[in-house]
Figure 1: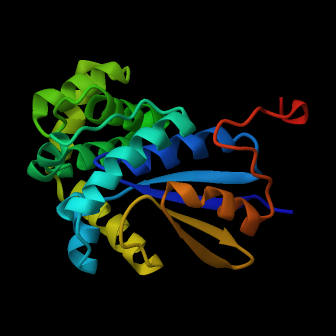
Figure 2: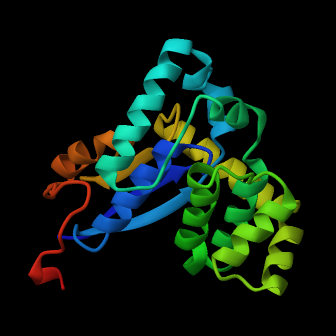
Length: 224
């Protein structure tokens, strides 16, 4: 039986994308899947679908504070959030960061996992900016990129090639039915299956015929 392609559409401004990202990274060596990271722009998806950030609804925002605290502990991901973070989130754009991540995907995809994780760590664990160029440079350094390569990527983010790639990936997510992130698409039995949210991975496992071993699975000895 062939391996199942699983695509993760994500934006580093989304904390739930971080949760789904880390769990899928753990399972990519356990399940019979090919995991493909698809950096996209959440702002574009929200605009195209008419969706609104959860923090714009007061009661939903209150719930999100409690939910992320619980989810972070359950998934063992160091995401933290406070009420003051909502204005920080709504007031900053992740477009530059996602273009930078897209540029690394186009040139040196081996750094994609590490770089994406460092953006989430900076924004959702350390509560620091990711929208300014100096912030992006700092994240790149933490991910192990040289200053020369980082500058090359910074030069690329304003290019039509990078802009178009990010736009096309975002549009592809929308065509699959995405209205927020994370959006996980599993290509199984000849058709795509969309799963929205980091709490649908157990259902993903069921659909593709894999076993759910919890958010922090132990690697079976047969996989080692």
